[in-house]
Length: 192
Image 1 (cartoon, rainbow, N blue to C red):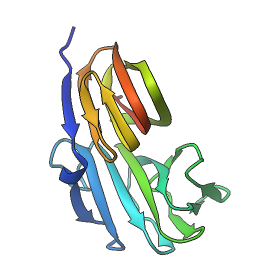
Image 2: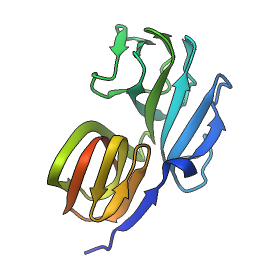
Image 3: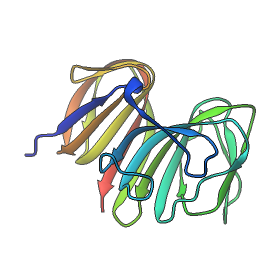
Image 4: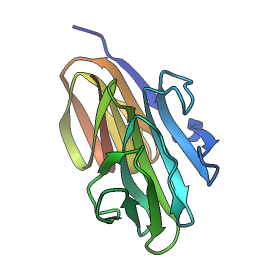
């Protein structure tokens, strides 16, 4: 059985960098391999503040999932698909990052969560969940990230405040204790 590598990524240590298209700033939560740039990452998790309508950066060979963290949301126009309205209550939205995409804000600035994986090397799944009290979570094999969106949570004795992320890699299937009162995002990244 592999010993998992567990890293607590504090919100005030996330890396800030410009968008690929220069239209704004992104806050990089985690990237693999560590230190990889926009052209050579295997997977990447980030947040971005979007203040104006406009096109998304195009990432050839990348799949992405977007979720709204703050604000009223946006309508996405993804080539070949009907317009998609994405709000804080919407399920995370997966789509190819190499499909030309633009967005119109519903009512003002938003912050989104962006998960990207390199097609043919990794896949990912993003889901939202809440904790109010004590329980257990099952960590699947592979790489798992748990982002604390609002509130506070504790997973196996590791405290997460809003914006913090727990990164668990080289993990076998295991159940871990969780407690607190929080809204979280569960991100599973699997090598193909």
